[in-house]
Length: 178
Image 1 (cartoon, rainbow, N blue to C red):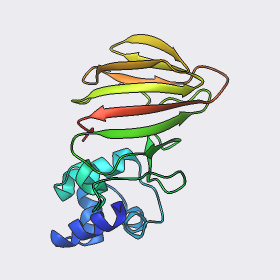
Image 2 (tube, rainbow, N blue to C red):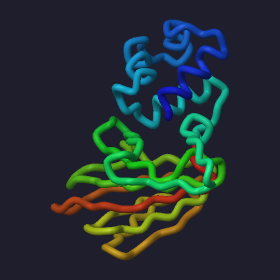
Image 3 (cartoon, rainbow, N blue to C red):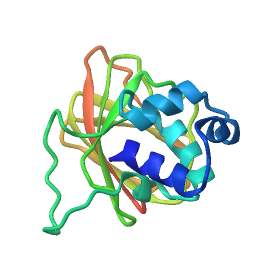
Image 4 (cartoon, rainbow, N blue to C red):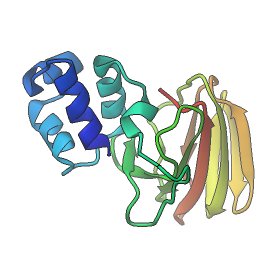
């Protein structure tokens, strides 16, 4: 689990919580909550931890799967917040270096980030229900239930819900965003 990996990597590097807080720009109180598993950190927080701890995101989320199979059950999935933390992704895949699949839900008026941004991956999203706008490279693509979009995620992008109903979607990214 993420909290155990963060604690293990911090200790392996001989860092105290205060030292890790200084290096990441995060509070020691937040890091303590992350290590105890009492809070779901934002993607931004996890990225900062990955850089300072010298690990990639798949390493931080790695789960032991002795059978070679990973089962993801509702209510037991790790949650990641995006942007300002107002929207959550459910992580459907274990920590791997080749693929990440997330389930997102955007309430009316929500967006995955304030501004579009890019990262070196290929991304594909499919709308499960509702209507979703994918802004990719400055172009708006309106997607309805059952429709999908695939793009080079180095292009600045984000997802928005301009409708009056919630929207839910699956997003896959390969390789996972660091």
